[in-house]
Each structure stands twice: as structure tokens, then as C-alpha cells.
Image (cartoon, rainbow, N blue to C red; front, side, top):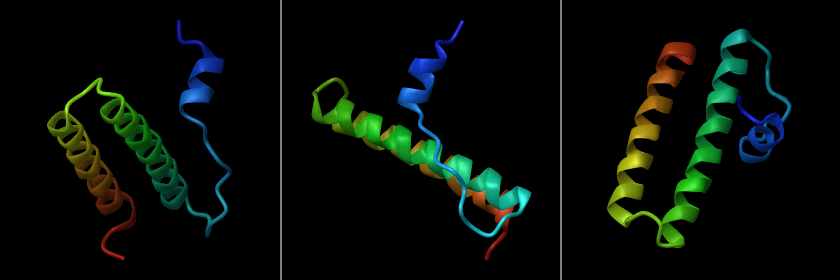
Length: 77
């Protein structure tokens, strides 16, 4: 069972402050998850736990997912 304290520490979520719509809210959550995961990947690479190539691969995959999320939720604004 996931530890809620650990999850909230590793994946903090800030309150949404933009123009409200369900799509904007969902994209904001996806964007926050993206930034949190990027920070972790960068720390792992800096600490020598993963290679620069592996960090790049993971970041590229996350970017692709975020881009698809934007297209699906917000279109080409």
C-alpha cells in the first residue's frame, strides 16, 4: 500500500490558480507531475545513479506524454 506522506513529499501538488476549466485543471496536474519527475531524473543523473543518455531518454518520453496531454486537453492554443 502506498505511503501517502511519501507520495505527497515526492509529488507535491500546488493549488490551481489559472482560468478554470476541467481541461486546464487536468493539464495543470499533468504539468506538475512532469516537473516533479524531471527534478527526480535530474537528481538521479547528477548523483550518478543513471546515465546522461538514460536521463535524456526518460525526459524525452515524459515530454512526449505531456505534449500529447496538451493536444488532447487544450488543442493547439
